[in-house]
Structure formats: structure tokens, C-alpha cells
Image (cartoon, rainbow, N blue to C red):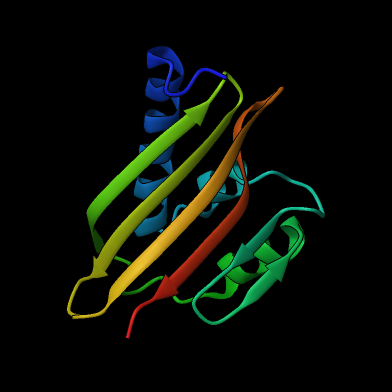
Length: 124
């Protein structure tokens, strides 16, 4: 298994940057595109458990678009071979002292890199 092949790592870093920008700007179209459109996709949020793309999409459409800004304080991206990756960040929301954590599993699908599993939690 080859870990962090430079070209694959660059691809995942770029798509993760795209995701992060879409998240804080509430670009739902991009967020939907970057999640695997499948019933097996899941997202555990700070206050919700979402099973399947449809539930994740409905959550995104219904959440408030305010106070989404955050600062990433630590980031680690690891790729495994050419088609699998894990991204992990720690973040703080603007105006909050709490630390958040986010982990995502990405898979290269025929249509591009997609999140197949995500987890967001807050410390304290």
C-alpha cells in the first residue's frame, strides 16, 4: 500500500479545500456534489445522525446559513493507494471557545472524489 502518493495527496487536498470553502459559504450544490449520492453514505454531526445521501441533503437544506465561519487549527490528510483517503481537522467556530473535530473518509468514484462517511463533534 502506498501512503500519500504526492499526486493523489494533492488531489485530495484540493477537493478538501473545495469542500471547506463550500461549507463556510453554505454552497449546498458543491456540498451535495462532494458527498457520495448513495443510501450507504453517513454523516454523524454534532447533534444529528444522518443515514443516506437524502438525509444529509435534507439537513443541509434546512440548517441555518449563519455563523458557519470557522478556523481550521489542525489538519491531517492521509491517502491510501490511489482511491482512498481520510481527512481530519480540528477547528474553532468564530466567536466560540469550543474545539470541533471533523473526520471524513473519501473514495475516488468514477465521477471524482466523494465523502462516503463523515463525523463532526465538539469538545467540552
